Length: 159
Image (cartoon, rainbow, N blue to C red):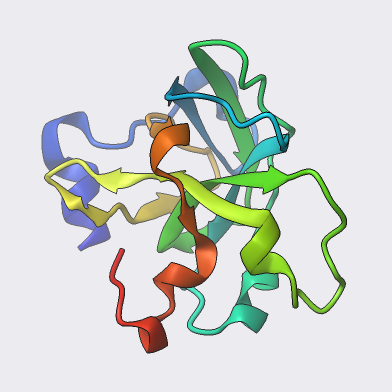
């Protein structure tokens, strides 16, 4: 499946200036009203989509905090060469996240995810080679963020 995604219309192409290391590179496009309670927005990647709240802390990354006051922002996320099922922009509300994640529901939201270019109703899969890839673009919509726990199968909500 990942090979098919890479072959479609150029797919995720190696990025010359990001070719020295394994990483994903892309553009975040921001829409909507930025909440006053915003502490930061960062990109993270999961090899497998978490199935329980404890899995929220198995991510790779995060990216540097994104400059969310601009209409777009470039990002880079260094990752081990691997396949990643969920690459998302995470919005964090001002506050302290408990080490056990017990308050993640109230402080973290999915602000946008990399989508499958052939079917944007589905999450996009990213295969990171040793040379990195570009084009892992994400639309962040501050008016339509979702609690990260909404993605857990036990809650009956799909990506």
